[in-house]
Length: 406
Ligand SMILES: NC(=O)c1ccc[n+]([C@@H]2O[C@H](COP(=O)([O-])OP(=O)(O)OC[C@H]3O[C@@H](n4cnc5c(N)ncnc54)[C@H](O)[C@@H]3O)[C@@H](O)[C@H]2O)c1
Image 1 (cartoon, helix red, strand yellow):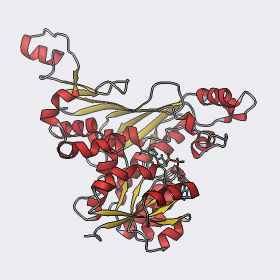
Image 2 (cartoon, rainbow, N blue to C red):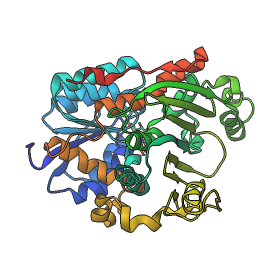
Image 3 (cartoon, rainbow, N blue to C red):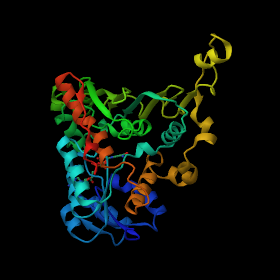
Image 4 (cartoon, helix red, strand yellow):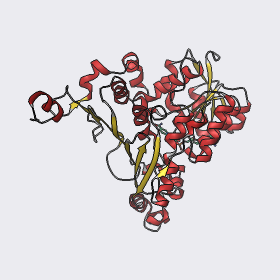
């Protein structure tokens, strides 16, 4: 059992600030004790909100000081692996923001650090905890979907306003769009729920990744509209990362997963559009974020070929989607039943609450890390596999990180 309450540090104070509701609820088990950020303004805000918190501008100094037992890594993506490894090698448990890493070499450094140190590592993929996603997981486990064959996950979020600071300086999100070869560089929100439904790294695993990207026209148009046609970013050739990326993942069991990543195109925001197809049910998020997710269950929902055949010879009759919530009484995930009020107050559809609770449980040895290093690197590997596939024009074979499990 770890120290109670656990002392928690945060590196990267902007996203790291969204765990407040979860921290309040879990205050008997975890206490915020340290913050690290490069920005004086951000540090000032944390000191004001949390008097007495130890503040650092240099992450290595935070690790060297005896200021925390665990850290949330919430800095820009390219720093996650390096900072996670440094933290683990300093004996700290790590909850890393997504994605866990951006190259295979970084993935291996994470795997080795977890194996060498034995500390808890978890990737903070909050989309796996969203209410409909956990309900679908519960339904999959109860056999409602039958055998799973196909899934989709789409992250459709026009984030172009985050590419520049108000003074026109490019942020790390802009640097990524300019410098990263076309790929799906943010796959885990889309893939995470699907991977849990399909048992990736359990009964199944990622086998190959094929990728195709559209040209970076929307980001160039945005730059032109905001800064004028003479700005270098007003020309599509300035940008490397395409506007809209499509990935086809094939799994070892032959299932197909379609992933779409688009953080540039003009469209209403919906960062969690999913479908899950099984032999006896289908789940579908609607494209308008205000509309409820849908489900159709053979034998329970209205109409359908199979039920028609069974009940009326060869006659089929029209099937109709139903709201997923209609089945909440039967299939709501038990954790959502228990913590509904608190989870709804936390960020990202409840995800920020459940993932912190799971992280603390894993440190305390109550349960294994639910998104361990092998899940984290496998889900993140879509980034470099899609990058490679764009170059070769082929489906790229995935590496089996679980082979390194002790
Ligand atoms: N899971 C989610 O739903 C979700 C939501 C938002 C962001 N994120 C992830 O969280 C991370 C941070 O995103 P953000 O929107 O807060 O970015 P941001 O650019 O707004 O903030 C990053 C912060 O990190 C600090 N920082 C940068 N380098 C640092 C270093 N070396 N040491 C200490 N601090 C440093 C910056 O000063 C800044 O305050 C990203 O990886 C992003 O993908 C995840």
